[in-house]
Image 1 (tube, protein in one colour):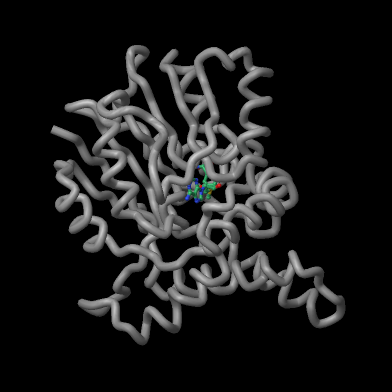
Image 2 (cartoon, protein in one colour; image 1 turned 120 degrees about the horizontal axis):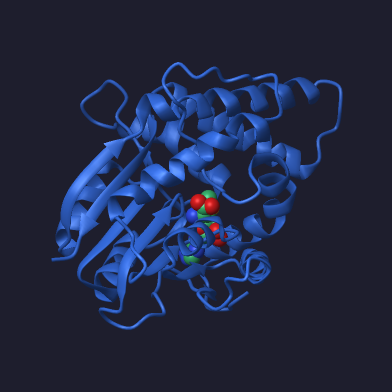
Length: 294
Ligand SMILES: C[S@@+](CC[C@H](N)C(=O)[O-])C[C@H]1O[C@@H](n2cnc3c(N)ncnc32)[C@H](O)[C@@H]1O
């Protein structure tokens, strides 16, 4: 791990080092570390293994996020915060584009690199160490599309990240992102009290310094100089994720009455508790934004 990382980023790396296999690959999804999108009326079976319940929905989220970028074979694509390589490999396989995954977690980069080799895509897909809060290791105006899925919520400097995106994109380049955001619930403003009751505990449990709001993102994107094409709040299609994690919280809360939980299980319990509470109370949302560099 690089010595130049902030304490907060070191914790993010340690978190993904220890949870990538044990939680995400084993219990969530083989290829993706993000939430799913559920079809209207889709039955979500809370009594079934999570992996089976979220499988298709997770794939659907990826499609919904990248669709507006209209990626083609000529595009140079960056996946910022590339996890275990699922997005980068899918884009390279489907569109034939060159893809560069950037990730602060070398443990995940190694998994992604060996998957690229196994898929015969190592020539077109690279996974490169980068702290996206600091700088993106690409030259000016060299990239057509940047994808950023459920990663910027961890960054200590999102303004810097967006400025770097603007720098490396070619004119006409597109940034498509989906991120965890704080929402206002039914009130006009997200009050400090609500933030400290619902959002700060969630940030503490999930290794994030803060959560952005849609208006915070809008302001930054405008200041950096992007043209905002659209924001989409996934709202109802994403809500079943909250019921799924609430059910996982309840299982662990029940178990703790009779068993000693491991440190990892205690962490999961706090993660599931804080996130489902904020989501179900209407103070958390997943939003996608699509912006262009003119
Ligand atoms: C929730 S996972 C999402 C992974 C991937 N985008 C996906 O959808 O499967 C968050 C990812 O962001 C990465 N990440 C967090 N902070 C980062 C930073 N400062 N720079 C680069 N990557 C970061 C993590 O290592 C992890 O791979």
